Image (cartoon, rainbow, N blue to C red; front, side, top):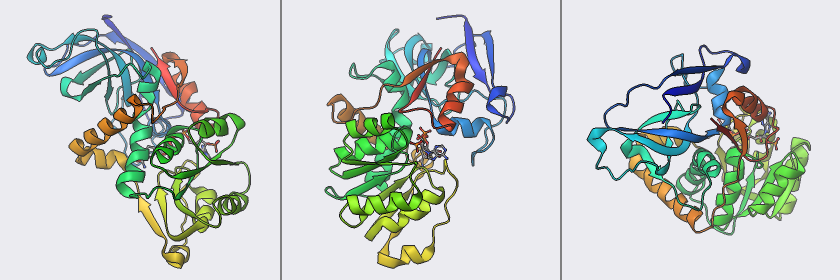
Length: 330
Ligand SMILES: NC(=O)c1ccc[n+]([C@@H]2O[C@H](COP(=O)([O-])OP(=O)(O)OC[C@H]3O[C@@H](n4cnc5c(N)ncnc54)[C@H](OP(=O)(O)O)[C@@H]3O)[C@@H](O)[C@H]2O)c1
């Protein structure tokens, strides 16, 4: 364990280049907690929204962004010495905030041992994406296998995870992404067909309809904007639009198009649900990890950025430059 902690700090809601790297003495360990020497921290689109004050929820400043960490246990509080956690154990944890750091202090009951099948980078980047996808498709949409799923933003983050989860659930997946590399990632995870997201929204909708033989059954939409609004029209009878995110803006979904064909719009707020249903979320995590261990789900190996390049990592996500995921390495 190092006596100095290096962290990326958001001192005020501001553009990404105002993030600062701070070095401080390691704080004493709180009761009930373990210290993790972080080896990788997942980077998500939402982190960029948080630090710029653009997210629905605004944490009090200053704060250290970053939700998902992986590392090795370096210290265990005396009152949880018999919790089964061991020094040197490889673990991951959802810390909410505080992940962009060389150390994390986490309640012993909130850490999860890692299977050998996941690298540190994969383990630090799968949780938000895969649990969102699983929650959307299994809990919210209750999908039926054999049906058609159109995934927008399919080359990275929650979209790529939805391709993987959708295929594992027996869905026929059409993936929409902007580059050959992103489309290849989606194909490798089982997308049956891909569409170039640089086409017009209308062209994407028409291609989705023809590739699926007339209409799609589920639309998984982390993108929103014009393409989300237009692709709603590709849904067939009883088709479901899953509202995941708004990287291209909040779509204005026309109610007449929802009425037609008895379509449905389903909200997906995994974070909010997980906070209210920790036991069910843990069960979902266990199910996803079981499928990963069996090789039935295959989280992508992320691109590694050094911790001090956190702002570049967030900017590259915003600029759609990243195929797959990014992990910060302290
Ligand atoms: N509902 C939930 O519970 C939940 C949970 C987690 C995340 N989210 C939300 O899901 C969204 C995606 O998060 P993520 O971490 O998956 O992001 P990400 O890894 O950056 O992926 C987003 C993808 O969207 C595509 N895109 C299309 N238009 C874009 C635009 N104008 N700007 C940026 N990207 C654009 C890009 O793919 P192409 O370049 O290939 O088109 C990009 O790779 C965010 O809004 C996030 O807040 C929601």
